[in-house]
Amino acid sequence: METQKKLAIRSKGLKGQIKVPGDKSISHRSIMFGAVANGTTVIHNFLKADDCLSTMSCFRKMGVEITEEGGKVIVHGNGWDGLKEPETILDVGNSGTTARLMAGILSGRPFHSVVVGDDSIAKRPMKRVTDPLSLFGADIDGRNNGQYTPLSIRGGELSAVDYNLPVASAQVKSAMIFAALQAEGVSTIKEPVPTRNHTETMIKKFGGDITSENREIKVKGGQSFYGTEIEVPGDISSGAFFLAAGAVVPESKLVLPVLGLNPTRTGLIKVLEEMGANITVVLEEGEDYEPRGTVTIESSALKGIEIGGDIIPTLIDEIPVIAFLATQAEGRTVIKDAEELKVKETNRIDAVVSQLKILGADIESTEDGMVIHGPTSLQGGTVDSLGDHRIGMTLAIAALVCKDEVVLKNAEAVNISYPSFYSDLDSLAR
Ligand code: SPQ
Image (cartoon, rainbow, N blue to C red; front, side, top):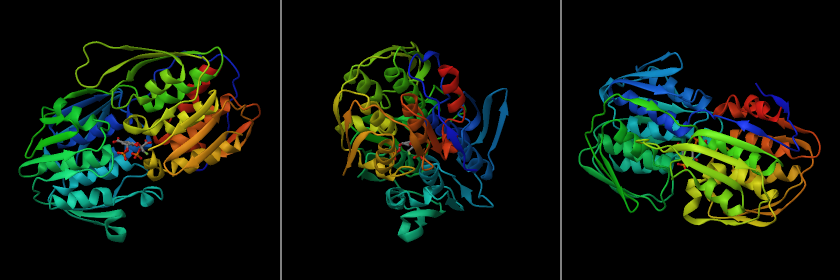
């Protein structure tokens, strides 16, 4: 159901502690590895948001028992062969991660499956996974010559490949890793730029083996995994909205405990530091597989900077909210090398530029990013998430510093990654 929401304006003083929900990327992967592992996997702090629920539902359709007990999610895995041919389509909803990673898993399973999603998924590029998965020997196709969903996969025996990824994408890399784990031989996957490595860290957590050196990943086929216990850290991509709010709303101080701080995800923290934010990071000691810690932010004056190159994959999902930050910073901010934004839930370059402009931002799109001049005093207006959770949450944070009322259309989009977002924000803005 489409909802319209009047957003809170808050000219000063956001204070308190905010424990954001579990990491979306890690939650997806914990279900996937739990499903193909032998034995029970117990997941604490699993993200119960629409995208991860789609992953859960797809694996249930393949016969995997997944139960819930006192806030924990329990996956009863029976190894790779525990996955059975689904009797119906596998619906990934809005989740690109589910579609692409699951395609890698299904490529090696000896049955037929059909992967579909919503209108946004139907526009997202799938050839980037269907092409390399075909090289392993998978029988995989999709609408328009493998470009788009629905995908049809008849899995079978796979052979190892050597492949240079043409795009910096953790989803493509992970789809290939899932195929490589089931293939005969050792596969080598080279990344143009390092991307989030949650698949790699989780392989080790589940007792498997993978090496990664100088952007070159080696995966041995025929690996088995063993059920384990996973503590999902808070999602830095959700925390990003509160870090932005804390940085720009005058007289604010926000503390975000147990936040995931995997270095392949922390580009936003570097950007905030370079912009002049008053931010401190305290890493928890003794964490074995996914670093986490407490991040504190206090409001301060910000300055515009240039963002591009290898840092982009480490903050790709935070660019919408960084664009908002730049509207409040002194000087010019340039975001480049971010053309991947065009193939997310929306074209996030067009979406963020068009919606922030409605509020009065001085922002222009470029071929591979955007240019923002600040600071601007934002006004009010009617804006639209355009069905994209990260655009919706960016606009809700922008509204905090707007002069007049802001109404957000399609406000329910936040349910994709952060269903309690508005109530968490309200609890601080009170
Ligand atoms: O799952 P989905 O829809 O692709 O989610 C997004 C998001 O904003 O939540 C992207 F739209 O995150 C991706 C991220 O951009 C999640 C992800 C992952 O878990 O591996 C990797 C990134 O995508 P990509 O295409 O760069 O690999």
